[in-house]
Each structure stands twice: as C-alpha cells, then as structure tokens.
Image (cartoon, rainbow, N blue to C red; front, side, top):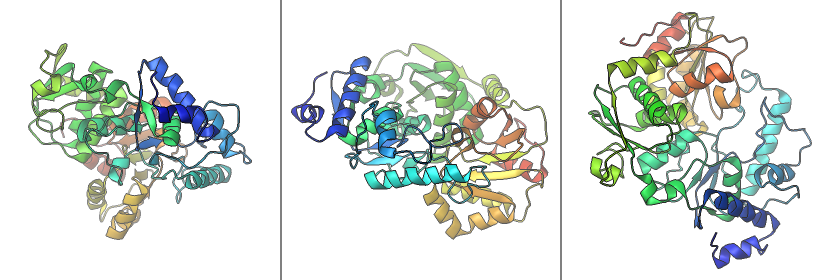
Length: 427
C-alpha cells in the first residue's frame, strides 16, 4: 500500500500511539482488500465503541472505555488514551431509548453503561445522533464525497440517492477512520465499481411504501451483492420510499448501491447506469414476484398481535405525521403494545408539533436511539409482531423468535387498534 508522507508520519507515531494504531489497522485492512492507497474522509458513521452495552454484551461497571476502544476498535492489547477524533464522526444506533429504557426492559446497570459510553463519545467528539438514518438529522454527504459508514440501510441510501461514496464498513474500520481521517480506497470509492451489472424491469405499478419495500426485498434476494438498475418505475421516489427500498434490498441481499434512471444522480439514463455495457443479468418484477416477496415476509400464523413496531429505518417527520393522523381519536388494543422509532432530533420536532401527544393518547410510545432488531428491546412476552418494515420482518423471527405480519402502515395501525392482523396483499 502506498502511503503519503503525512500518513507515514501518523503510522510512525508522530500524532501519538492511538492514531498510529488506527493507521496500522487501516493499512492491514486495506492490504487484505487489495487497496493500493488510502483516501481522505471527513465523514464517519460508526458504532463508537465495539462492545455496545446491551443485553447481548454487557461490560463490567468499572470498564475503562479507553481500554475497551483500544482492544475492540483498534485491535490492540495495549491501552491507549483515545484522543479527539480527527474526522467528523457520528454514532449510529444505541442500546436503549433514554426516556423509555425501563419499558424496553433495559436494566439500571445497562443504562449506566450506556451513559458511560455517552460520556466517552462526548469527550472524544463523537456526535451521538444515535440513529440508523443520520442523513435525516443533518449528516448529508455531498455528491462524490468519500465517507466511512456502517449500517447497511444508510450506506445504500447515501451511495444511491446522494451519490456519496462508501462501502459497508465495520466498528473497527470506522473507529480507525475517525482517528486519522482515512479509509482504504477500494470497492464503491472507485467510479468504475459503481456501474450497474443487473437490470430489473419493473412491470407493475410501484407507488406506496409497502410496494417499495416488497420490490427492494425481492431485488436483494435476486442480485445479492451486485448493483441493480431498475427501469419501469413511473412514480417518483421520495426519502421514505427510497429509505425502505434500500433497507429491504440490503437485508435480503447485500445491496450497497442501485440506480433508477432519471431519479438517482449517477443514472440520468440506463446507458449511464451501466457505463454503456450490456447488463450481465436481466430480471423482471411483476405480480407473481410481488406476491412471492409478500408471502416470504409474512411469517405469522396467529392473528392476535402482541406488539406493533414502526420505524425501521427510523421514521421521518412526514411518517410520524401520517401515523398521528391515523391514530387520532382511536385507542390501541389493551392486548397490544405500539412502539414507534425515530431519531431523537425528529422526536423533538414531533413533540412540538403535537404528534407525540396524539400517539401517547392513543396508547403508543414514541421512542428514539434504538430498535428491536439491533438493540434487542421489546415488551415482555411477545409472540406476534406487526410492522411496515421489510427489514424488521426479515430479522425479528431470527433474532427474537417472533412471528411477524408485514403490511402497509395504514393496515398496521388498524391492526394495533383491533389487536388482530387485518392486512392483506391487495387491500
């Protein structure tokens, strides 16, 4: 790997042992990947500390966070005092909601560790946005900007919709990048690697968010790690629809980027999306494929619902407005818990707009910073869940053992009120 003089000085310890360890990690990482050099980045989104304190992995109360970071994030048995981050760095999902942690089943000991982790982030300058959608709360990289981001649903959004450049990074590579402002130049940082290889011809109307989720889920299963270009979409996408499409495609497959001619920035035409090459594979998505995806996501057999989960990826303000409108004047079934997830910054606005009050009056809770799949938080004794998220419908049966119903947000809210699933594919 070819390093610049500035990078060599960091590697040699000129900026301290922690930054030297971070540079060593990136050099090893990049060498394995076949990267010939590093690229500068000033936009990092990661997990902050590799041992996120939740019910899967709880640190001892006296944990030294610098030592934890040195070991888990910089792969070093030597303890370093972690200096302030060099790159603009944002923390992704947290282990709990700071207000509703007790309702989520989080212990006081775990809460204390979350707060200790927060203090560490504050000290080194890691912005605690605590959301899987940092682009909704101020971190909006510009076209062509090199980033180092974790979180598959965020990566596919910024690559595809914003035209920024990042691979799906991990806790270690993002931690190292935050300290030295560099990431290996490989994969989707390289322009020719961003061209579409698979063509998906959409033969049916795709408009509401459920259909964007179903399409994304089917596309991800078909193309896996490849880059698809979709034609035949007649309704313009928008943030919440592209957000759910990309999250679904990254969940059922490993899609990190896609193109929609005329909608995404690197694809004014089909020819531009493919670089003028014939796609390796052409696929067609019609009514049969839509039904296949819907049936796959609906794993439940019991119509009685214990838990309603909305907000994966985290809900936007317009989604909260719709949910509040659907709940106004209604009451959630006594047998059902309704939890809605959004970034804390958006919750603040939703609170001022009165949306949270409507949700709470109906018997729901508006939560931030966490989600059931990643933070492993949910009400007690849940067996059956309903959600409008293809990502949660995919993960919850495996991670928490729940039966899951998937459908439109209107159907999910109606089911919350009824306490039973009322959705169907062609409602």
